Image 1 (cartoon, rainbow, N blue to C red):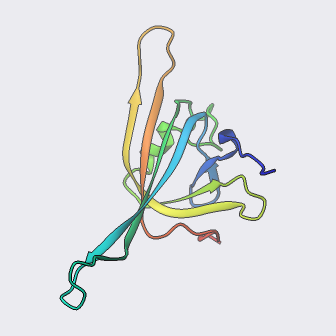
Image 2 (image 1 turned 90 degrees about the vertical axis):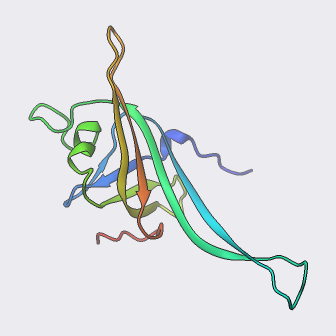
Length: 145
């Protein structure tokens, strides 16, 4: 029987130039990969469409509860909206635990292409969401080492 992997085991981290910080209090994160298809049709084989691999891209999306990760009393070993905002205008290196015994992590670089903060009134908690658009390929060897 296959081992099922819980979503809570797939933790996303961002590198802060000295260590990987977990993106704290996430309620969900996802990885979406896309491969473009090149279609062609020639006079050598009329009416037959052939397909081949084109470019590929990926995007990470995440949502979580906003916590303090940058002030002196905050959890400076983690990342939340406040920390992601400070690195939004630079390429970042990320890591995601896969939950698999033989493939410990996925790694990549990217740009925070979207970052938003929701701050409702009353007893509701502040939340944030972000998208990281990939730059290059997803790898299983740490590019920082």
